[in-house]
Length: 171
Image (cartoon, rainbow, N blue to C red; front, top):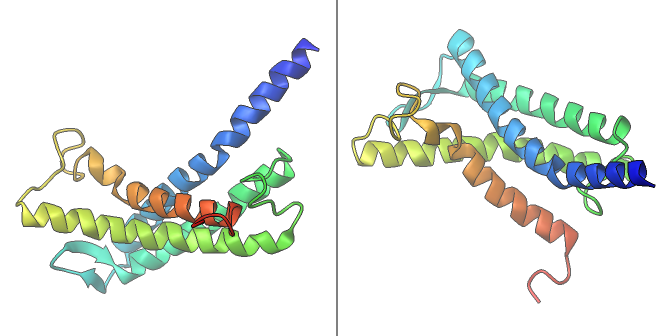
């Protein structure tokens, strides 16, 4: 009775935030991969005027980290926890073709993370600001930790809404 109710509530709360954690960590690990690969192997800048330290090699590192994380996370969620990533939308345990959506989201993590980074860097350059505030000075400020997350989470929400309600989204 009571233990089952507690576990049921925990499982419901767990599944309701699995996707959010996937997006957050997918974007952050893309940043981490891009940073380290860019520092050690980066030779070809993406856009010197807007973000002088971003390189194509770093972007490739972000892709690798993002894909590795996305697939490992979904495998753990579906295999060990036995819950779908997004109930009724992405459940690789029931439908192995959903791995294609996992790959698409992984690519979205790294692509939109970079677009968000460039967008916010361009805004900083336009207003001659080095950082987005005083928290984390020298790292671009606290907003730099979330610029890619903001852009990616909006797009991810739209994609999930379309996948979950393909016929009634615009009706």
